[in-house]
Image (cartoon, rainbow, N blue to C red; front, side):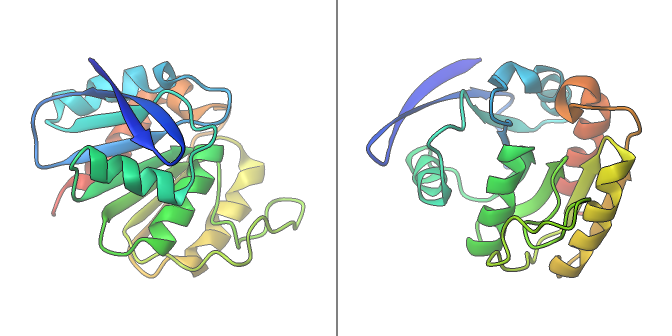
Amino acid sequence: MELTHVAVGNGNCTVRIDGPESKHTVLLLPGAGDGPDVYDGVCERLHNSDLRTIVPEDITGLDESTIMALLDELKVGWVNLVGSREGAELAWSLAARQFGRFASLVVADRGHPAAPDAAGAVRGSDCPPVELPTTVMVGSPDRRAEADASGRFVYSDFRVVQLDGVTNVPAAAAAELATEIVLRTSPW
Protein backbone atom coordinates (compact mmCIF):
# COMPACT_ATOMS: atom_id res chain seq x y z
CA MET A 1 0.00 0.00 0.00
CA GLU A 2 1.22 3.43 -0.92
CA LEU A 3 0.41 6.40 1.32
CA THR A 4 0.35 9.61 -0.68
CA HIS A 5 -0.08 13.17 0.54
CA VAL A 6 -1.93 15.31 -1.98
CA ALA A 7 -2.37 19.08 -1.82
CA VAL A 8 -6.09 19.87 -2.10
CA GLY A 9 -7.76 23.16 -1.34
CA ASN A 10 -6.06 24.84 1.59
CA GLY A 11 -4.52 21.67 2.99
CA ASN A 12 -3.33 18.16 2.36
CA CYS A 13 -5.16 14.90 2.05
CA THR A 14 -3.52 11.57 2.78
CA VAL A 15 -4.77 8.70 0.65
CA ARG A 16 -4.04 5.01 0.49
CA ILE A 17 -3.43 3.81 -3.06
CA ASP A 18 -3.14 0.11 -3.69
CA GLY A 19 -3.87 -2.63 -6.16
CA PRO A 20 -2.65 -3.49 -9.62
CA GLU A 21 -2.07 -0.88 -12.32
CA SER A 22 -5.42 -1.03 -14.01
CA LYS A 23 -7.71 1.02 -16.20
CA HIS A 24 -10.33 0.64 -13.47
CA THR A 25 -9.93 2.67 -10.28
CA VAL A 26 -12.28 2.72 -7.31
CA LEU A 27 -12.50 5.72 -4.97
CA LEU A 28 -13.81 4.60 -1.56
CA LEU A 29 -15.06 7.30 0.83
CA PRO A 30 -15.41 6.13 4.46
CA GLY A 31 -18.00 7.38 6.92
CA ALA A 32 -17.13 10.02 9.50
CA GLY A 33 -15.14 8.45 12.31
CA ASP A 34 -14.18 5.44 10.21
CA GLY A 35 -10.54 5.04 9.32
CA PRO A 36 -9.50 3.88 5.88
CA ASP A 37 -8.95 0.39 7.31
CA VAL A 38 -12.75 -0.07 7.33
CA TYR A 39 -12.28 -0.86 3.62
CA ASP A 40 -9.31 -3.26 4.02
CA GLY A 41 -11.39 -6.40 3.40
CA VAL A 42 -13.13 -4.75 0.47
CA CYS A 43 -9.86 -3.52 -1.07
CA GLU A 44 -8.24 -6.94 -0.82
CA ARG A 45 -11.09 -8.44 -2.82
CA LEU A 46 -11.05 -5.57 -5.34
CA HIS A 47 -7.30 -6.00 -5.91
CA ASN A 48 -7.93 -9.69 -6.64
CA SER A 49 -10.42 -8.51 -9.28
CA ASP A 50 -7.75 -6.33 -10.95
CA LEU A 51 -9.06 -3.04 -9.55
CA ARG A 52 -6.94 -0.21 -8.17
CA THR A 53 -8.21 1.51 -5.03
CA ILE A 54 -7.91 5.00 -3.55
CA VAL A 55 -9.07 5.54 0.04
CA PRO A 56 -8.74 8.89 1.86
CA GLU A 57 -7.45 8.51 5.42
CA ASP A 58 -10.26 10.81 6.62
CA ILE A 59 -13.13 12.54 4.86
CA THR A 60 -13.24 15.46 7.29
CA GLY A 61 -12.94 18.67 5.28
CA LEU A 62 -13.41 16.96 1.93
CA ASP A 63 -16.04 18.24 -0.46
CA GLU A 64 -16.76 18.05 -4.17
CA SER A 65 -14.01 20.47 -5.17
CA THR A 66 -11.33 18.83 -3.00
CA ILE A 67 -12.22 15.36 -4.29
CA MET A 68 -11.99 16.61 -7.88
CA ALA A 69 -8.64 18.28 -7.09
CA LEU A 70 -7.47 15.01 -5.50
CA LEU A 71 -8.36 13.01 -8.62
CA ASP A 72 -6.72 15.60 -10.87
CA GLU A 73 -3.54 15.60 -8.77
CA LEU A 74 -3.41 11.80 -8.92
CA LYS A 75 -4.05 11.95 -12.68
CA VAL A 76 -7.00 9.61 -12.43
CA GLY A 77 -9.62 9.86 -15.17
CA TRP A 78 -12.71 7.71 -14.85
CA VAL A 79 -13.45 6.46 -11.35
CA ASN A 80 -15.94 4.06 -9.83
CA LEU A 81 -17.30 5.86 -6.78
CA VAL A 82 -18.09 4.17 -3.45
CA GLY A 83 -19.19 5.72 -0.16
CA SER A 84 -20.42 4.66 3.24
CA ARG A 85 -22.68 6.79 5.48
CA GLU A 86 -21.25 10.37 5.37
CA GLY A 87 -18.91 9.27 2.61
CA ALA A 88 -22.00 8.10 0.71
CA GLU A 89 -23.56 11.56 1.04
CA LEU A 90 -20.44 13.04 -0.55
CA ALA A 91 -20.48 10.33 -3.22
CA TRP A 92 -24.12 11.09 -4.15
CA SER A 93 -23.27 14.78 -4.47
CA LEU A 94 -20.20 14.10 -6.61
CA ALA A 95 -22.07 11.69 -8.87
CA ALA A 96 -24.90 14.18 -9.35
CA ARG A 97 -22.77 17.23 -10.08
CA GLN A 98 -19.60 15.99 -11.80
CA PHE A 99 -20.81 14.47 -15.06
CA GLY A 100 -18.23 12.58 -17.11
CA ARG A 101 -15.81 11.69 -14.33
CA PHE A 102 -17.49 8.74 -12.64
CA ALA A 103 -18.39 5.39 -14.16
CA SER A 104 -20.60 3.96 -11.40
CA LEU A 105 -21.86 4.60 -7.88
CA VAL A 106 -22.16 2.18 -4.96
CA VAL A 107 -23.32 3.59 -1.62
CA ALA A 108 -23.91 2.00 1.76
CA ASP A 109 -26.43 3.07 4.40
CA ARG A 110 -27.46 6.33 2.72
CA GLY A 111 -30.07 6.97 0.11
CA HIS A 112 -30.07 9.89 -2.28
CA PRO A 113 -30.10 13.16 -0.27
CA ALA A 114 -33.46 14.18 -1.80
CA ALA A 115 -35.11 10.87 -0.81
CA PRO A 116 -36.92 10.95 2.55
CA ASP A 117 -35.40 8.82 5.31
CA ALA A 118 -37.43 6.58 7.65
CA ALA A 119 -38.56 9.63 9.66
CA GLY A 120 -39.61 11.49 6.49
CA ALA A 121 -36.71 13.97 6.67
CA VAL A 122 -34.89 15.05 3.51
CA ARG A 123 -31.17 15.83 3.89
CA GLY A 124 -30.54 17.59 0.60
CA SER A 125 -33.44 18.53 -1.63
CA ASP A 126 -31.05 20.54 -3.83
CA CYS A 127 -29.06 17.46 -4.87
CA PRO A 128 -29.80 16.65 -8.54
CA PRO A 129 -30.45 13.12 -9.80
CA VAL A 130 -27.50 10.95 -10.84
CA GLU A 131 -27.03 9.49 -14.31
CA LEU A 132 -24.82 6.55 -13.34
CA PRO A 133 -25.43 2.86 -12.77
CA THR A 134 -26.10 2.89 -9.01
CA THR A 135 -26.34 0.36 -6.20
CA VAL A 136 -27.62 1.26 -2.73
CA MET A 137 -26.76 -1.21 0.04
CA VAL A 138 -28.61 -1.04 3.34
CA GLY A 139 -28.00 -2.98 6.51
CA SER A 140 -31.25 -2.40 8.32
CA PRO A 141 -34.85 -2.81 7.17
CA ASP A 142 -35.73 0.75 8.30
CA ARG A 143 -33.35 2.12 5.63
CA ARG A 144 -35.01 0.09 2.86
CA ALA A 145 -37.72 2.67 2.12
CA GLU A 146 -35.08 5.41 1.77
CA ALA A 147 -33.06 3.19 -0.55
CA ASP A 148 -36.12 2.35 -2.67
CA ALA A 149 -37.14 6.04 -2.84
CA SER A 150 -33.67 6.85 -4.17
CA GLY A 151 -34.59 5.13 -7.41
CA ARG A 152 -36.55 8.25 -8.45
CA PHE A 153 -33.26 10.15 -8.42
CA VAL A 154 -31.23 7.70 -10.52
CA TYR A 155 -31.56 8.01 -14.29
CA SER A 156 -29.72 4.78 -15.05
CA ASP A 157 -29.63 1.18 -13.89
CA PHE A 158 -30.59 1.06 -10.20
CA ARG A 159 -30.29 -1.74 -7.65
CA VAL A 160 -30.98 -2.06 -3.92
CA VAL A 161 -29.26 -4.71 -1.80
CA GLN A 162 -30.54 -5.32 1.72
CA LEU A 163 -28.23 -7.00 4.23
CA ASP A 164 -30.30 -7.59 7.36
CA GLY A 165 -28.54 -7.02 10.66
CA VAL A 166 -25.46 -5.31 9.19
CA THR A 167 -24.73 -2.02 10.95
CA ASN A 168 -21.56 -1.05 9.05
CA VAL A 169 -21.55 -2.47 5.52
CA PRO A 170 -17.82 -2.07 4.71
CA ALA A 171 -16.72 -3.58 8.02
CA ALA A 172 -19.30 -6.35 8.39
CA ALA A 173 -20.10 -7.22 4.77
CA ALA A 174 -16.83 -6.69 2.89
CA ALA A 175 -17.41 -9.57 0.47
CA GLU A 176 -20.91 -8.38 -0.42
CA LEU A 177 -19.77 -4.78 -0.92
CA ALA A 178 -16.80 -5.85 -3.04
CA THR A 179 -19.10 -8.00 -5.18
CA GLU A 180 -21.42 -5.07 -5.86
CA ILE A 181 -18.47 -2.85 -6.77
CA VAL A 182 -17.05 -5.45 -9.14
CA LEU A 183 -20.46 -5.87 -10.76
CA ARG A 184 -20.62 -2.10 -11.37
CA THR A 185 -17.11 -1.97 -12.87
CA SER A 186 -17.83 -4.71 -15.39
CA PRO A 187 -18.91 -3.59 -18.86
CA TRP A 188 -21.44 -6.41 -19.23
